[in-house]
Image (cartoon, rainbow, N blue to C red; front, side, top):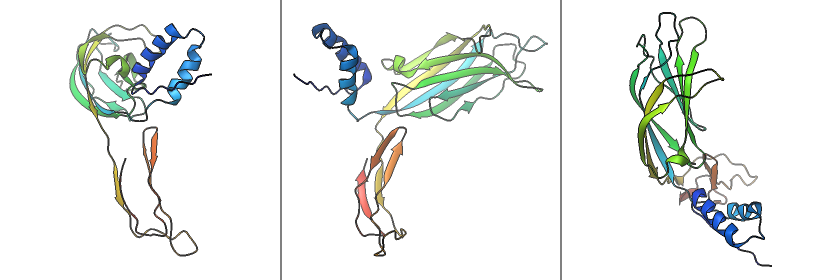
Length: 223
């Protein structure tokens, strides 16, 4: 029995390898190959900054009895805090926002940009107009993306209208340096501690070295 190990820098490359291996190794199931490649995928990942500009919308449906809408957008990226644009009052269904948002993203393969357009009501709950979802892994070959896109239904309601968004992905390497700590609490019976630091970003966690018998540890360690 032979065991082969594969290390891919991205899931996209991983999928290409799986397809190629399947063509030459008919005895292996896709699940077997996927389990091997995923268990050995590189832990190094490029983080990115996602710059989103909500430009404008057109042909929105009339949500109010006077024949217009009062639209605003809720913008979100997976596991990030949502952003709310300003409301455009009585805009005759063609609002112009021109608002820019920046989201730090630690997993481009799974992150999804979601935009929900709502109609603000003075009384009662706001009404959803339509939504848009853009998986970031579909944009990996397009660092800059801008176009008109049709809104999709929310809660199975009929929808009309389009929205134009500008998306710019800038890859960056996140480096965190743990320098030192001081005046820590003694946790051991000898009046000292053996401190270490855990650093978490997104779903990734790193642990520093342990400094024995020290309440003022110096690490100077990069992650």
